[in-house]
Length: 63
Image (tube, rainbow, N blue to C red; front, side, top):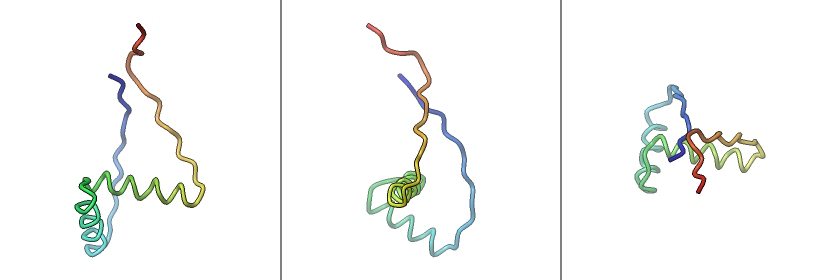
């Protein structure tokens, strides 16, 4: 199975903002990390910022 590499992003936010993200994630049945990723992707799409798609690692599945 092909996998992609991930990287860590660490930042500080106000407690109220964190709680709002946690609530939004819960409503969407997502983790906080996944909710942040979705928010970033939505913002980039809205503002025209291109996101480089990750290169897949692993063996190709030739038959």
